[in-house]
Length: 315
Image 1 (cartoon, rainbow, N blue to C red):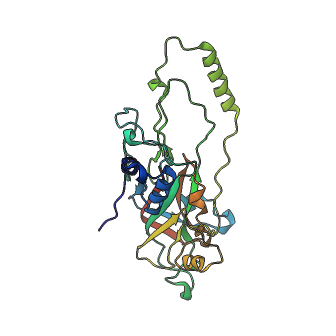
Image 2: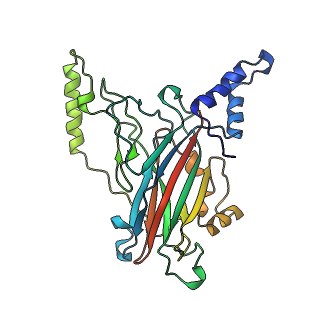
Image 3: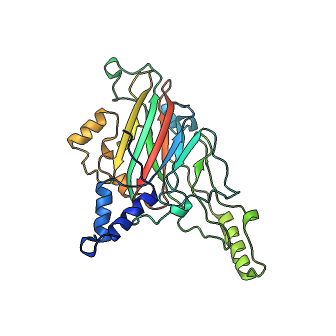
């Protein structure tokens, strides 16, 4: 039996059900929140990349900063934000090789619960390394594996001003495997400007744009040279056959890095510092999750056959 995936409307209907009970049976909203969390009754988004990709290692002198040694697999939609209208002509078509499933449409959207609404992240990976190399005792194990996956947070510019009369910026999707994301906001040609548009406001906008031109670009993203203790999953060493791994991070995870749970995670190819739930609990509304594939040292390569990320949040 497959697991039921509730939509935002499904989750909100629970509040309506409890509100319709007799007065002496009505539960306060805070208690309903606890019930929904205990039942894991949350909507979610699914971002999937189905086109295979390969990441190859390089020389140690470069410190793992070669562009071919780190590849962005996918970026999830901003946490808890509504999808763009389905009839928006400015919305680009779904990129080739990328599948995305929304569990609600725009009219069903409701504000997420609290500033940190994320409850669970599920990574599903199908991958393998180059099929040779490493020591004999490490073959088939995860220690001394130099191909792995990392997760990172892509936070929005929360101070970005919104131009008057422009349409709301929607979620973003990667254009293709390892490429930059495509923003679904409208262009200037799509902005409806009133005939009585304030010229002072226009001057302010122009000055603001000129100021942005003088700003320095953000520093390049720094990539870890060796597998960190926060990695999502490593590949088994010297195994050419594709293996599937499902990694779940939950908001109520609370194990320490020196615990038995951390030992078990590390022995299965996960980072021992991923069992504390911190990554999930610290995600804010609007944050996106990036999934990176990495490889280090010559001849090592990370062959990614499939990868997907499900992000669950509370409403």
